[in-house]
Image 1 (cartoon, rainbow, N blue to C red):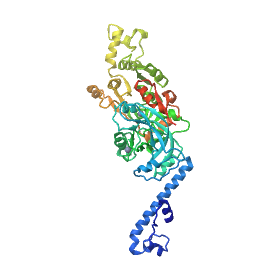
Image 2 (cartoon, protein in one colour):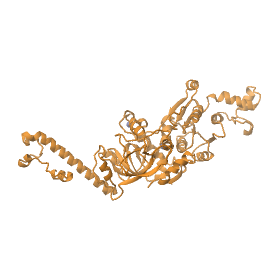
Image 3 (spheres, rainbow, N blue to C red):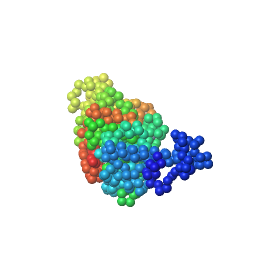
Image 4 (cartoon, rainbow, N blue to C red):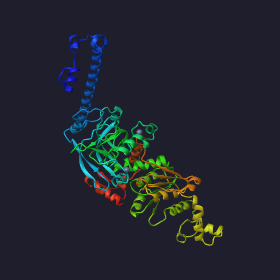
Length: 519
Ligand SMILES: [Zn+2]
Ligand SMILES: [Zn+2]
């Protein structure tokens, strides 16, 4: 053991005490208290144990390095500790025979173009996994950061919706994690990467993880308060929006990962980690959608498209898609929408109420073109209540009867005050208005307090989902073909084109979701 430690650490002086050399202990354990010379034994014992533990640590590291290089060609030039990484170590770190650096897409300041920069190869710490990124989705949350609408530490690498391949585990990572995600595993990453230890994580509410918000969202780091990204040119730190997914490699806490079966493609599956994940959290936990529910989704982008498909999978009977672009609404029909409303051409709330009304009353004797609102109750009301004409009866019905009508669940996926109001007004009495669209910082939504109180409207915020319980479920649904991933991913682009993809997203030119293919 001594010679092993000696050569491992490159010490110039022998660490052995001359007194031990002169009188070697005869018992099985060289550190037995009884056998060591009395005057020295305390200090020696301490030192010897320290040397022993260093020896086992360094040999464990070498063992791990051998395992990694044998399994996937990954080699680490230096053995790192779990604590902070010295700068020279960062520079010396490389992936066997190959890269010691990588490229990442950096956001510098609001409304300045993203640039591609070279980084030292990021190093995972305990409980973390190094991923070779294969694909990263182009999401509105990144855009909010890029436009300066959501304050975030900069410079930072954006991108938080990834798939990739496991290439390394951080030192001292739990054996169970290594077994769950062996080298070479295809994985998908959730944008909320739960710490697993805070009071919310312990309760299973990983979507509220304190560490994620306190460190990642507030400081742009992982949960030891440090980033894993350092520029190759000058070693300066660059922050991470979630895992900093728009890069050739990224470090992800293992709690934020799920295995991606080989039947699911890297590119299309990237959206499982944010768009679909967020939609699942909203439909499953916030809205608790049940079979037979009427659901309206306002804003049919990446998340909204996923909401439609989950509503269909959960058995919703009416699924109403609301957007301002006919192209998105046509796409919505393929993803499960039973009705569509173009908010530029029609009054969203009136149309939703009218649609719901037709579910309850379908005995109108007039052909559709007689009744503008197509509520089909006008004739009966006209006869029974003596209202002058069927049309006026229709208006009456609309105003009087539909007051408490609406969908069971309305989802707002845009984050705008106008659509916030539409969402709260389109639910029935006791219905759930679920907000999942992030707004510009400081945005305020309005609500009629008396209706909220008397009609027991529930307004529920929902952010992401619970990675360890929900992400595997999302993957299972995808495997069963619940999501039309091909239809939701409307554009694939190269790493170099990521900046222009965000520009197009900003201009509303991306119908579903754009995904950047990285390696
Ligand atoms: Zn996102
Ligand atoms: Zn937590």
